[in-house]
Picture 1 (cartoon, rainbow, N blue to C red):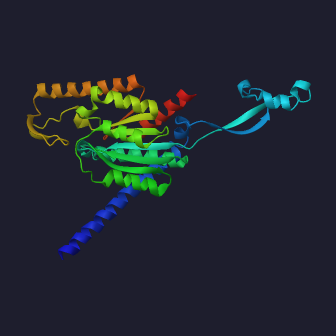
Picture 2 (picture 1 turned 90 degrees about the vertical axis):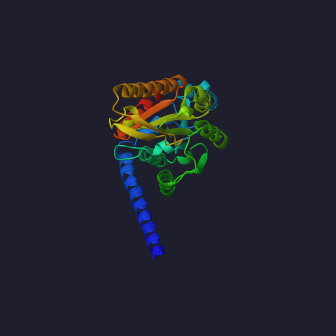
Length: 315
């Protein structure tokens, strides 16, 4: 009987997981097919260009694309043809997208109907489906204070669904976080330039500029690095709940505080805002694009704005 009950719970949990993943897929694919259909391709360029063909010069063509050797060979210098010839190129479109996701203990916190890790999974799903829609490959690095899982970049719907499942339901061994380790692993394993989304709440001493600046800067020079910070409102403003026991989700340290104390609440808010400002300045200094999202908001508008700003920058 006990075995049957356990099997029943396992099947129920499996069905709930499938339903949750399917829900994310339906919502995400709708966003990708409508809101982000052209944004992703405009925002991220390929590795280079590939020669396709030659054609006659037309008014408005860039004169730098004229192939003077071919033009001369075809007789322009002798007056036998009336137009020079230009080279036609196509962008080498296929890219590699790496999702580097922080799975430390603090990612399993949320006070607005969903955990930070759930919001991270939805953002990752949108990016992944946008990538495969443009025939790009997607891979995953799941990290805490160790590398929890590495999934080789591949294409296809089934592959993306596996990534979403890993983010939502994989049980990591570690609870602390070490972004330096994750970035070093990434640079060792991914040799060619890739688009890297570092998805984390960026909490903890490991994310202080003194510890993160060098590895983040090296990764940003080698890859197209984008930081996605996922926060919860309760992390920026202490809820007024009176005496409460607060546990550090990563270290397990427990302390009792009076959350109704105005001085404590103000000090907490100032400290967290200082961390947010310091993080933003670090990203600006290193030239790292930043997408801030929260568990209490719809992230699509920010992602849309990010893609559009990238496209304008390329133009």
